[in-house]
Length: 133
Picture 1 (cartoon, rainbow, N blue to C red):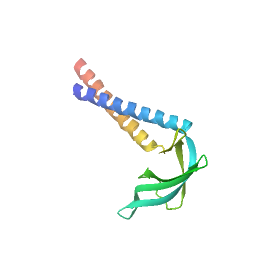
Picture 2 (picture 1 turned 90 degrees about the horizontal axis):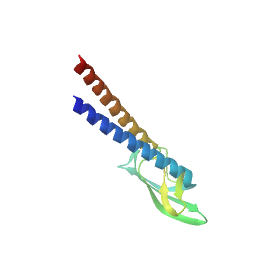
Picture 3 (picture 1 turned 45 degrees about the vertical axis):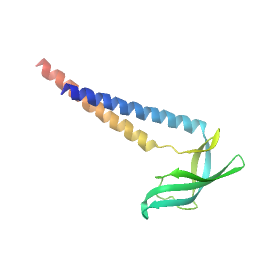
Picture 4 (picture 1 turned 120 degrees about the vertical axis):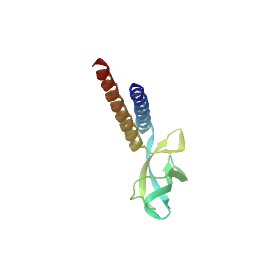
C-alpha cells in the first residue's frame, strides 16, 4: 500500500505543478498580450450538433492591418454564432498568434492533482499508523 500511496503523491504533485505552470503562463499572456475584438466568420459545428464546436474561424484588425481566416480552434462559449464578436489576446510580436486562456484545463489539472495528493497522503498516514500498532 505504501508504494501505491507514493505513486499517488508523485502523480498528484506532477498534475498540480503542471496546472500551476499553465496558470502562470496564462496570467503572463493576459498581462503581456493585447486584447482585440475578433469577428467570427464561421463557426463549424461537429456533425451539426449545436452543443459541439469543431472550429471557429475569425478575423480582426490589429495596428491598422486586417487579419482574416484565423482558426481559434474548437470549444468556446455555446452562444458563439457567425458574425458575433469575441475578445481574444494577440501576441504583439506576432499578430497572427491568437490566444484565449484555457482556465478550465488549469482548474481540472490542479484539482485532479490535489485529489491524488490528498489520497496518497491518506494512504501514507494509514500505513504509518498500522506499522506503529
